[in-house]
Every structure is written in C-alpha cells, then in structure tokens.
Length: 421
Ligand SMILES: Cc1cc2nc3c(=O)[nH]c(=O)nc-3n(C[C@H](O)[C@H](O)[C@H](O)COP(=O)(O)OP(=O)(O)OC[C@H]3O[C@@H](n4cnc5c(N)ncnc54)[C@H](O)[C@@H]3O)c2cc1C
Image (cartoon, rainbow, N blue to C red; front, side, top):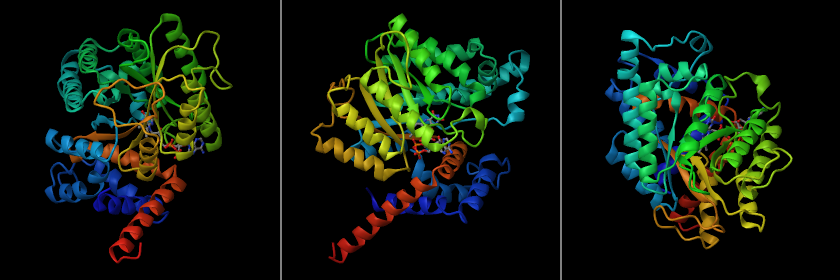
C-alpha cells in the first residue's frame, strides 16, 4: 500500500477512535454536509475543496471525474483486489420530520422539478457509474438518491412513478448488457419494505440465469426481522425459480432507526450475521434461516469489516459443506485495510489466481475480495463521508484495531529504512 494511504488511514482512525477528537470532527463534517453557504460548500470554496480532497475525500472516495475514478480503480486492482463495488455519491438521509411530511411530488410543476433536478441527475450518474466499471465489478445503487418521488413511493410501498421506473429499467438493462451486477443498498427502515418490493420485482425479471444474479438486495443482520424477511425472499426465489442476489451487512442506521427493532446486543447481531452467512454459503437452512422449501440458487456479497466473520465465511467456503455459490467479500475503501489485505493475502496463498475480468467463479474458488468506493464531487460526497464517520462511532474497538495496524506498518517501514527490520 502506498505510504500516503497508510498515513491517511492512521490519521482518520486516530481521530475516529478518540473520544475527544471525534465529536468536534463530526460537528465540522455535519456543518459542511448540510451548509448552503458558499464559504462552507466544498464545491464552491476552492480552498476547502483542496483541503478535503487531499484528506478525507482521498481516503474514502474514488474521484470527481471518469479519469480520476479509472485511476483509482486501476490502483486497487493493481493491489490485488478482484474489482470494485462502485457507487455514485449523491444521497439523501431523511430526518423523522422529513419522513412524515413527504409530499407526493407527482403533479404539475413540482413533479417536473423532481424529474429534472432529482431523478435525471441520479439516473445519469448511475448510468455513468456503470460505464466506469468492467465485467467482474459491481455497482451499488441507493434509491433514496433519486429524490422525493422515490422516497414518497418507497415510504408508501408504491411502485416507482413512471419517470422513475423508466430510469431504473434503463439502469438495469445496461447492468445486464454489461454483466455488471447491481447492489441495491439497504436504507433506513422507514423505506426498506418499499425497497424490498422493488428489489424482488427486478430480481424476478433479471436473475434468470441459475447461480448468477444481476440484481442483489441488501439484508441488515442487526434487524430482528431480517431472518423472516430474507427467509421469505429465499422461499419466493425457490418457488419461482430465480437466483436470489443477497448482499449481507450488519446495518448502518443504529443511530437513527428505532432501537427496539434492532438486536439488543452487538453479540446478537454478530451471531445473526454469522448464522445467516453459514446458511447461504452451504445453501442449507439452519437455526436462523428456516423455510419449508428447497434452498434456492443464491449469489452472495458479504459486506463487512469484521475479520472474525470473514474468516468464518472463508472457512465454510473452503470446507466440503460449501455449495460453490458466487461469493464476494467487500470492505469500504478507507476502512479496515488490514482486514482487506489479510483476505487478499490468504486468497493469493490459497492458489486462487486473479481471474480474467468477468470470468465465471469456480465452485471451490476462495471468496473474491472487493473494495466499495463512491465517486462524485467533493460536495456530493460529504453526506457519504459523514455517514462513514457516524458508523465508525458504533465500532470504536474495530477502528482502534485499524489505527494500531496502520501504526505498526508505519513503524515497520521506518525500521526498514534504517535497516532495523
Ligand atoms: C461493502 C459494504 C456495503 C455496505 N452496504 C450497506 C447498506 O447497503 N446498508 C447498510 O445499512 N449498511 C451497509 N454497510 C455498512 C454495514 O451495515 C455496517 O455498518 C458496517 O460494515 C460495520 O459493520 P461490520 O460488519 O463491518 O462489523 P463490526 O464493526 O463488527 O460491527 C459494527 C456493527 O454492529 C452493529 N452493532 C453495533 N453495536 C450494536 C449493538 N449494541 N446492538 C446491536 N448491533 C450493534 C451495527 O450494525 C454496527 O454497524 C455496508 C458495508 C460494507 C462493507
């Protein structure tokens, strides 16, 4: 890894694992993410943009234009990653009040404004994201980024409005044509049932090739309801004969979703995550996921920085119990680099060659390793960066591990320079 990356990792993890430095940093980032003034908007203030671009942005984001994004992706593949999960940074995070007062935005001038200023830029950005990737990569997609019409329909569990449906259809067609699977992100619980409805509808249409999903839904293991929801989706896939694309994460909205719907302890979340992972990789029902039908074809993406969970997944994959499904593991760019590097090294040591772009995954192949990274202007990425910072607050112990690993590597390199290592 380049020295600059390790130095940035050490600085960002040192700040986010410090009880003294983290609160003012969060306040500073929140101000930048929500400010309308030219002085505090990184897209309007060149000095602020320069500072952020060299620090936080460089740590977590891919680039502001296609040339920068391609350079970052090539750099990651050069390090040995199988590819990237690329996302377009534009996103909206709803407050409770906004969720309650969402206007339909489906009529007259307001509707035109929604299509012109929200749906079209989101769709254009997502199509561009697909064009920036290669077969073997993934593209992640956040429906809330499409603005008010999307939020209104999702909150009320309605189908997408006609202009939004046209945009999503075009995005899915391009993904299928380029063979770049789409990962639909899981979001706040207020809109998640709506997202699940849309995801299932698109999975039915596009996931017709056995064992190879083009559309993935995301399941948050911290929700008490997830085993039932995922179980019912698996049962539907089994009965209707399509492949269920499953991206499994722990869940990023601990601070904003109602606490009672989330597991009471971190340990419960960890157990749910590992148990669901085990069922998916073996394609066998278990104590957490249990339905009365044959287990369907699945394609799996595990999104996590938790090394213990990733090692368990890898062990099941290497055992005779593995069902040989498509299996990818992904970490966010700028986070848990020590976990990503350990997974990459084990994959290389297991003799799994770096496959050609888009090559079919072999049943016994070690999980492929990816970095999840977003692109967009510095201003567009601020809300994404803020969410990452909040997420680190929920995982202080892991952040400290990242800080210590970066520090150990810096010391190792310094000793090597003076001939002591
Ligand atoms: C590739 C990728 C894609 C992602 N996509 C999404 C997405 O679409 N939607 C989304 O919501 N998140 C997404 N995330 C973020 C993810 O949900 C987690 O917030 C993040 O990865 C931290 O969890 P972890 O598995 O890395 O492990 P850890 O650091 O071991 O776990 C931290 C997580 O544990 C849970 N937790 C912490 N404390 C408690 C507690 N007291 N009780 C119960 N649970 C607790 C929380 O989920 C917290 O985020 C993604 C992450 C990755 C790597």
